[in-house]
Length: 133
Image 1 (cartoon, rainbow, N blue to C red):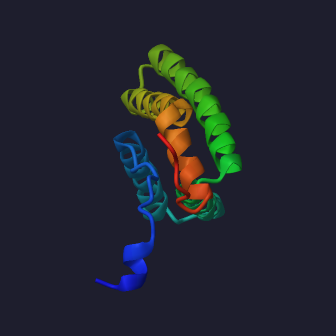
Image 2 (tube, rainbow, N blue to C red):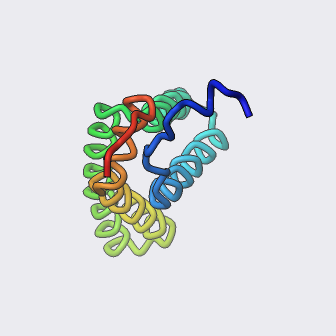
């Protein structure tokens, strides 16, 4: 054991909540779907945007959390619109897309409003600063 690290106080920074791990998995699925469809400019731009959001989220950036919350809110609205349209048209693919979009965006909203997640992001933004219980 190094004598320098023995004298340092242990950080009480919160561990990554499980909901964040699930959210990161959903974000990586979205990135994977964009990589699978890199045929047009919008897919490349979407991939770049998702990469920036993923990086900012992992760094604990509050502005990124706000953008993700607004994007999830808009996604819930568009997902619900897709569900209504799918019910009228009878398209199973549109129904699956609407359910996936609505569910993932609603989950994102719930996760980003969770106090544990906000504390974890603040800890990440402050570089793992020590938190008192």
